[in-house]
Image (cartoon, rainbow, N blue to C red; front, top):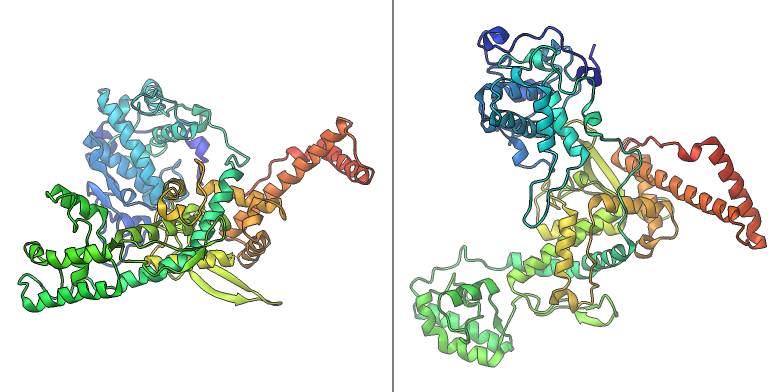
Length: 624
């Protein structure tokens, strides 16, 4: 039978052997020596992937087949050589393998070991904290774990409870959740002591015996969701801008981006190292074709202009901003050799004087209504390839933020949206269609999560379709990258001050903060207050509500069900606020209209019952 975690971290370990290596293991480094780490832990690797072995100084999990998109490359590489004292490397290896494989027969013999599997991501956090603890001990002349005292534990925790000093700023005390995890990393070595052959705490020693890590640091569980919603003065322009970029600009941008990808590249074109008369004629013909149409010569990127100036070009050179090689590609020539440019200058100078220079892409931009006035304006001015790619990046950010704001998906779920995630729409009785997204439920699930799907509104379906087209991602490849909404918002806010966005009448965005949790919280609260609310002014909130409800009904145990629970909790809180407000009005003897008197009386009666029964203070146990 498994011993409760609280007991494991508070009760003495009993007759734990001495810390002399000869006494604890006869010189053997580990009970796991030579083990295949992934086979022991039940982790699946992709075919041909490197298989980490226990004795390796670095465990490479880069080939994990079930790794979620949220798992970084750094989390997949466990470097035990970072532990200064070699004696403690097998100790930490044993700990982590014990956490990864709690049902292994070697771990089952440890009475106080955890019996719930810890994921590789969780174990990586244990590794980082263990490295910090071990190296701190080494720096303080501790050479064996048997020498560790409670004073060492307290000194380490206090020293690591403060942020690193930054220039011009004083240190701040870290959150209790952070310091609690540090204390846990120190404590967890105690219950696993019987597993270790290389070293262990002295018999009976448990750091902060009788107290959990949370009790040590004063961390308290938050019953209520403390995440604030996105303020209305931020949400309004954010939704308006992202909808406009996705639905109005997006289709035109995607069409132009398709043209860019289909345009000739240097690969496969003829080499102009020997620029003879025939190629000279083709180049001149390409320039003449532009002049005859009155089309400006293509403009180079600012990066190329900077390189030319650094190489000694005259700032007033007429060809400083001309993309010569793009003209060459129109003539099916790979590039114009630098030593041949003087020969081409007369032709190019004449063309620049006649038709000028402009971006190559978006020259025939279709008109769209401005975001602010509705007046028609070309969706873009001519762009260089680099400027077009940059616009693509920011419209992808808009699609990412819009999807986050109108689905309530967590960051880990958004990262699992891949090319091909859009499932076929379903026709529903009475007309209309229901749109669905395939993703994975990650939180509170086995490592890698389980397949899941969301019922979404049409705007989200179009946003994901646009992301598929703009990225050109192959089926199964992620669309939204790291989904750092706070960073995305900051970058989008800066880009909206640039000419591309200003000429379209897009609104400026106030300073944040904005993140995925706040957007999820906002959606839950807006749905709880339906049919009003700011979100309802930008999105048909009824459609979001229907989609969420149907997603819950379709997969009762899925992630959309958890979001629905948050909505119901927010709805409960909103109704309670209304009831309390009515009760306060009654208490203050505020004048009520005759028609509303009976309603207020019923609310007061109801609120009195709730206050007497204590139901308004009852915590709601939500699986979130």
